[in-house]
Image (cartoon, rainbow, N blue to C red; front, side, top):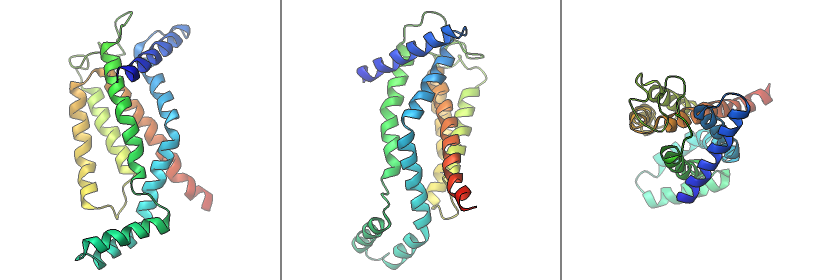
Length: 215
């Protein structure tokens, strides 16, 4: 993790130097630029994730039929579901891949922001110090934005056929993200909010693209 954190710090330095050349030296802006590059690099995985989720959503009615048909035989249900996924060309685990990839990146950015050797005070608009948690964000704007953008991002993938557990997580996860963001460095919250906004735009584009093609 030290190696990955070092890469993130090198990236933060690189983009901070760019902000200097732009005449707007600011670590908050550097974090936003770094986030954009990371999200662009992960875009192929995002496409894979969205396609997997859309595929599963389309198969929900048939999946419920199988669950109802074999509800008394779990072993048979698992075999039928595996065969069904194979015939449909859908991998139910594909949607987890981007999350697994992003977790070490998120942890690395946490340490990179917290332990970075700043050349000046890492402030950003109302955020007094991006390397520290509250009172860096006295108005709790970043935690609120983290919760709201997490909700919107998750809501985009929900359908009328989504199960009760998914719908419950839709309400619980944003509150959890908002809460833990309060305890993390403000810069990490800025990364999370920026990442969510980009993800929302990417998902919006990918979800509307097939509908546009049919017109």
